[in-house]
Length: 123
Image (cartoon, rainbow, N blue to C red; front, side, top):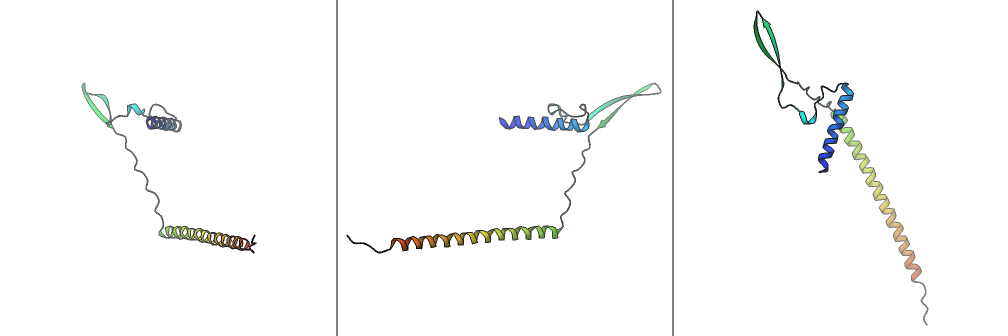
């Protein structure tokens, strides 16, 4: 399946890009080894000859994506008005070209009819 190869190539390119940006290869997750749960580390702390085992969970905290900047209503309105004006100009140009073509074709047709309807010679 071609899309699987393309997907794997995209993942490899993305990982290479992340490695080149961060400069570290150890922190980058390989696509085959993505953990499903947060990482758990274990540390042993000695307190008055009693060993305590403390589990620290280090879960990656993703930063929320930034929303796109709000567009001003006036900006949207002016953009739409410009697009509509551009569309109208194109439509007027097409109509003008159609009218010119029609007039030119009718002129040639009338000239051809006039030339063909000349005096008839009887034999």
